[in-house]
Image (cartoon, rainbow, N blue to C red; front, side, top):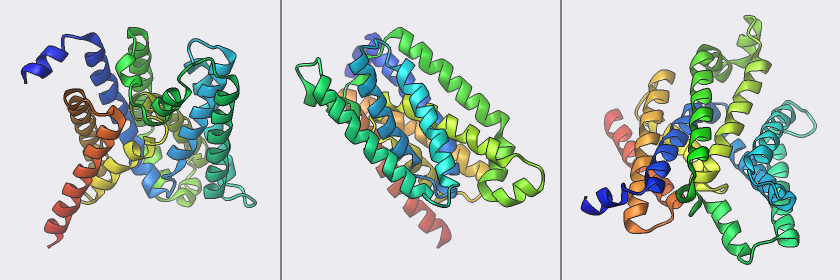
Length: 277
């Protein structure tokens, strides 16, 4: 406890905890929707696109890569949504094609035009989020706070429409709900969440941050609202615990957060089995 109090005197530790909690909260809100719509791997696809966008920003010499990464990821989310409705290229095939292509091209660009002497370290940090969460500036924290508030506000405002589109899209269209519009809103929100989560867990581990809390909550709760609330609380707790453990133990932040999510899933799994028994 004394060591933890000592570390909290440093601004970067407080920044990491604030941003980690905000990212975990945003990630968990739409995790339930993605799991129920069988679209869980969109996080993987968009995270690889974000990696490619970071490589492009590095090649262009853009100091704030968010100016490149966010628009590219949002555009890719829209394209993935359209591809999922295409009869020629199905949704899962489109995700695989875009994610693998973006990851390969991103690494190729970094290799060809790299200005860093430690290319492997930069790539590892981007893929696994090992140090980026501990090097945040006050401006980045403020930007994350604003984007997180927008994500939460959009989710709460469109909650009932998202609920309808999640469970029965055909019936939603029959009742006059513009399902395509709300699917587009979901895709854009997911893209923003992916860009935010890059700092915490890196591009390869983002899906775990989105999916594990939702799957854990589903082991115990049955209603959409109950699963969503439990997922949000669990995700925030796991992110906070993972960041604190990583600071004290000196382990990579992203991997530690995901490990805590895995442990929580195991606990909820057994709790669900006991409840049914």
